[in-house]
Amino acid sequence: MRTIFKVKMILLSIMILLFGTTQSVVLESDENHIKSATFLSESFEVGPGKVAVKTLFDIDFPKGHIGVKSFDVEVVDEDGNSVPLYETYLHHWFAVKYIENITMSHYIKQSHDVSNGIEYERNDGACQGFLLPHHWGLGGESRGTSSNLPNPFAVELGNPTKIKHGFKEKWLFNIMVIDTRGAHDRKGCSECRCKLLNLPKDFYNVTTNINGQLLSRNYKGGLFCCQDNLQCKLRNGFHGPMRKLSLRYKIRWVDWDEHQVPLKFYILDSADRVRSNGSTPVHDCQVEYTIPRIHDSDSLHVKKANIPMTKGGYLIYGTAHMHTGVVNATLYGQDGRVLCTSNPKYGTGKEAGNEKGYLVGMSVCYPKPGSIKIKDGEILTVESRYENKFRTGAMGHFYIYLAEQIPNKDLNI
Ligand SMILES: *[C@@H]1O[C@H](CO)[C@@H](O)[C@H](O)[C@H]1NC(C)=O
Ligand SMILES: *[C@@H]1O[C@H](CO)[C@@H](O)[C@H](O)[C@H]1NC(C)=O
Ligand SMILES: *[C@@H]1O[C@H](CO)[C@@H](O)[C@H](O)[C@H]1NC(C)=O
Ligand SMILES: *[C@@H]1O[C@H](CO)[C@@H](O)[C@H](O)[C@H]1NC(C)=O
Image 1 (cartoon, rainbow, N blue to C red):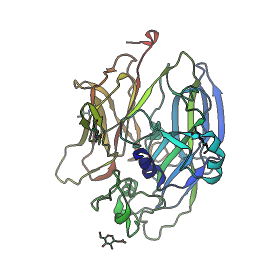
Image 2 (tube, protein in one colour; image 1 turned 60 degrees about the vertical axis):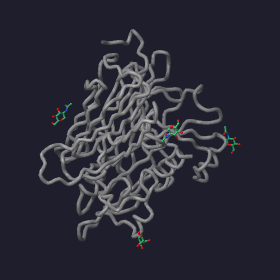
Image 3 (cartoon, helix red, strand yellow; image 1 turned 30 degrees about the vertical axis):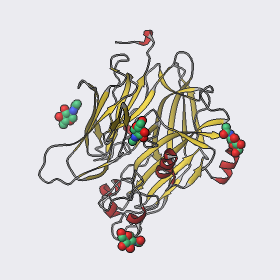
Image 4 (cartoon, protein in one colour; image 1 turned 60 degrees about the horizontal axis):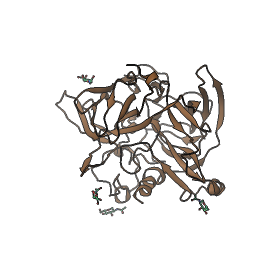
């Protein structure tokens, strides 16, 4: 029940149901038998200063028993042009897996009622309940962050022997974008600063935090202030047109066969206040945090969490989902060895993908397969470092893919 509550809170409370009317654009094959397709999501409308938080159910996705090699997303306008972050800030997109009762599919599609017949399937960890459940997802850094998984590794999906009988695997997007055209304070608006938004009068009386308790009146900004259809204060006299935007997403995959090696995907939160209950870790991911105003400090702001990995494996890929202001993020092993550092790339121009002053990419670690092993039960440390400036809704999410086994022929030490 707790899980269902979380689902409702994070995904469903502020959503508008939109069912897919997407179009498939390209299908190609290359010498590694990798197929690729580019899809366009259903559109959503934004206007100057407006926040849009949407859940798009049943998005187009490759069918069958497959291994996904990459999943890349960007925001485009009605003509298919890339939209720069200073116009529409992409706070996040999450691709979330769920299974749907086949006999109820028709009803769900007609009624848009998802309270029955759907079960959400989260990634491999490590947050509690349904926090950070996605299998893919980034934010403003999407265009410059590689999601490619090296051969022979892939994320296995659609295995008919693993899908509950009578159910079908499906995908949804949970997205948050902020149209900052004309915003009085673009940066603050992108960080969901509560003071900049036209919150309803009873906002703090009715809005609950990640643990289901009333939001503190000291909550200065972040996910909970960026609700669908709220608006950031605009510069005097600013007018701009409404626009229809979509996510354009490219998925590359292979048909599953004995040559593919499956990966597990974990998201480790530097704001996880993990405790232990006997030998069982109890996660308490905060998902976001505030960097307080400090006037006389040149040092960096560091947030750290020590996270036990119940199951280990070989590190195949590592990166971090962070926000503008990030200096770097590092994952350490229990003995202090650096497993991966992810470094930011900041934009220097005007064009989409290189927006000046915005975080436009995070580097990815690709250790030689077999060279970095995380032991079962090993306690990893995630460290996210930001410039020490007031910032709300800061995130430090480390993304890792682990292979539990590597075939000898693919060991490449
Ligand atoms: C699917 O939904 C139908 C209709 O509500 C129900 O009778 C059936 O038990 C469900 N199937 C499973 C496997 O839960
Ligand atoms: C919100 O709660 C405060 C007391 O905590 C109360 O004074 C105020 O009237 C409430 N506002 C609304 C709009 O319900
Ligand atoms: C801790 O473990 C005990 C016994 O296994 C269990 O009853 C309790 O609910 C756990 N507490 C938390 C917070 O998970
Ligand atoms: C992260 O950045 C800080 C500040 O520039 C630097 O001192 C540190 O060495 C970096 N960490 C890693 C692991 O590269």
